[in-house]
Amino acid sequence: MKPATAATTSLRQAGVIGWPVAHSRSPTIHRYWLRKHGLAGSYDPIPVEPERIAGFLRSFASSGFVGANVTIPHKEAALAAVAHATPAASAIGAVNTLWLEDGRLHGANTDAEGFLANLDQIAPGWDGAGGPAVVLGAGGAARAIIVALRGRGVLPIAVVNRTRERAASLAERFGDHITAHDWSELPALLGTARLLVNTTSLGMAGQPPLAIDLRPLPAGALVTDIVYTPLETPLLASARARGLRTVDGLGMLLHQAVPGFELWFGVRPEVTPELRAAVVATLGAHK
Ligand code: NAP
Image (cartoon, rainbow, N blue to C red):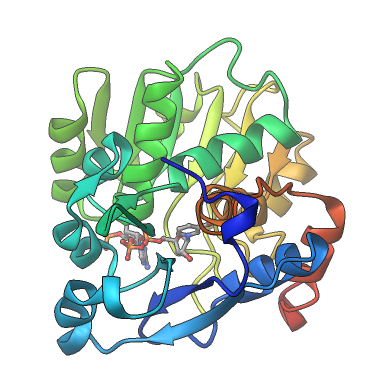
């Protein structure tokens, strides 16, 4: 990736492409950094209906934007549209960050590095002893988490999912040390786990809670949830009540935004307590 230089950043326009996209916290994050660094760029929601996404991305170079984040449901369409994808984006099968380079559309997926940077910041050394890790869920976010953990050598990874075939297809896609399991196998898997990651939407406001018995987990295990509304999900609350280390999912969202901002605006921003507080203030009842 070739970041913009500070001299070229004035009035650069970026945004987040999604449908719907009004709920996205990305404008709060990027506008905070634009203000903090005194940059004249802009960052706005870019609503694009599914029927229009292919055409919108085809003509992105003439849209006036220097780049964009991509969110649900367009991450796979963005991968299909780019002239060049980073290895992580290709491995994950989705693009969440777009930029123009030499007039061509490039795409990255920064969810894996966002996930790792969050754990590194809040629980330094978390990966020192490697796996086993247990990943709950087998959707889009699970792919990013598996790529992240595999890249750090946190293996083996047990993928546990309601629909077993989806877990099996991830195990097949990502290699030897990744196995697929039913929920019924969870107690045995937790017994030796060093890391438990929830990537399902369970526990999110408006969804059923993720109710699992954490008693089998070893005392030194780390529990993290990528759901961040509420910040303390029922899973994290029950892990904390057991005295286990926990990391919430908001930091992943904040850290995944860093590479895009640097590419578009030429400054590598930091994830600070002030930024986190600015985003927490938008969570309303879900703090
Ligand atoms: P997705 O592709 O739709 O996958 C959803 C996953 O949740 C699937 O594994 C699904 O299982 C499981 N699930 C849903 N309802 C369930 C239920 N009632 N019982 C058991 N399992 C259930 O979604 P995604 O894109 O991976 O996102 C998942 C969550 O991660 C969302 O809450 C999203 O907001 C969050 N997220 C956070 C960040 C961050 O930066 N912190 C980044 C990305 C995503 P089946 O396969 O059986 O349907």
